[in-house]
Length: 135
Image (cartoon, rainbow, N blue to C red; front, side):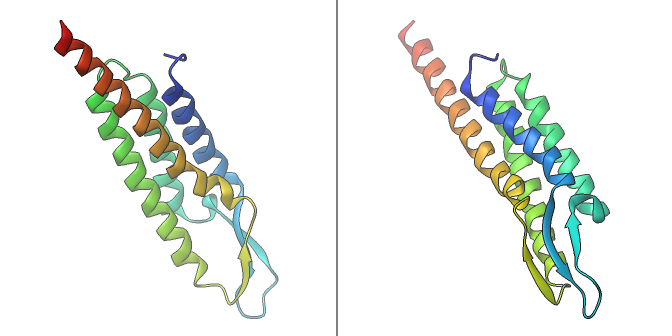
């Protein structure tokens, strides 16, 4: 299980998902208020979708025996994370001033890790199918 590189990518995606809850995505202010940090914990929908996506990525690690199901779960986590990123940018539009914080790197790294994991699982599936053909 841990000798496969996609396990590392899925673990990194899960860790970045949980990290993105605490790290500030952007810092800004609404009209004349003081600047505040916007994290994943500030919005209930973003928090729930991020936790679900991180959990799905973590559970997918243990489904290495059923690669098609593992790929479907990674696709579901990718769609959830894309939705979370859209929600972050919709929340960003409410602020009049501010900018994206360094903590947003964790949120942007999750889809990259999921794509890398999916690529590794797809390559493993192709290898197993080619070996089955040789028998």
